[in-house]
Image (cartoon, rainbow, N blue to C red; front, side):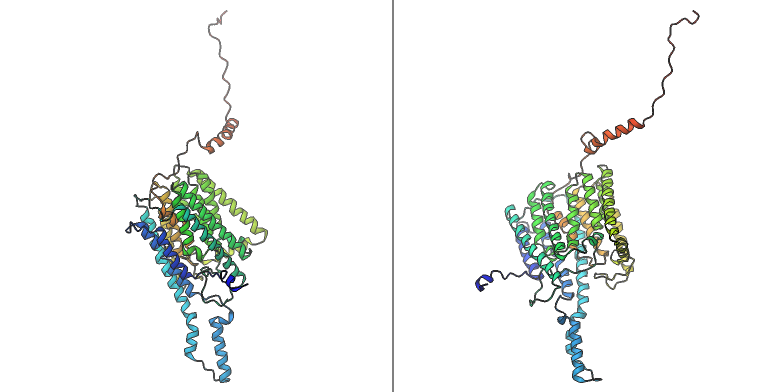
Length: 489
């Protein structure tokens, strides 16, 4: 191809640091209200990037994917071998300065990783407090984004195409085994790590090719974008707020870091459907049951949702939740039992120390190298917070549900010992809804009118039929003697 033509096709993805700076500057131009500098919205726009340095520290501490001859351990072994050959048997000497230079990255990596997870721990603590503070905010002025809806749609579509390229590169790197390509920078998708699956449903896609998992993850991002827009349109009565949340979601570095990883995007792709369908308890229960079966940790929000529907369809919500959850788990059991994988999966789950705070974790997280006894109080505090969401605040509206659900998903990662804190996408869409939401005191489940409720009308005929079948037959009354007759006649 001629050089003047190929120069237009020499497109490289930015590295993580470049994407961080670029997205921050663009977010300031789009969502920062310069006419109201001292506002919560402006603080939210700035602080949403607070977790990115922690992820960069984690990336810097991990060994980069390169060719085997470029690994520090291989280089050190080669250095020792060369010295042994040069000095002869019994006279092995190594230049300590060179050896220290080679060993430095290998020894400093775990320290930087721990610092990164400490940063994520502290940063997520701020967002946890922000969620609790949101429960006390009454007046929220309507602050529209600095760009019109047409511009937001165009920018979102452009970012989505860029994310498609990132997902393709990520899948290509898995297929290619990550061999070095001569470039000194790492693309924005370089934060993916082949860790243990954190969901039970992960065993179903474990045998899928990398491109299929990346394609499904990309489809999950599209579902999240559509749901954010629909929530803004239906529940915020402002499609611009929903479009702003969707654009901001695509713009943030967290989405670019994990765009091709299904276990990061799947929870919100399912859970946001329950938020959209909150006015229909049965449908919301079905969606939440599906999300729990697929990703397990939405079960911690069940007390919150039961309190939300108290007196307004709690029974049908709970029944729908249990039926869908049981059906999903039963289907998984039948699928895995057919391939003799069920017992293996149960055994792996019981040996997985990341979600069991009474076991010593052997995964990468803030708790690496820390005794398990220190994780127990954090787990107990988390359970106490879950129990408290059933009673405070009362009554609840949709804004309370969004804020408390976000706080639950944040605090969950404080004791989760497998990259806890790095799963920002588990709560990022809800956090953006919290930033852009209006006043929502009236967003509560509707009262169920027996004459208009579809479930009551559907059950009225079969219940009436059963009542007529099983009702007791009344005994026949004795024949009465007619009065006014003369018995002596």
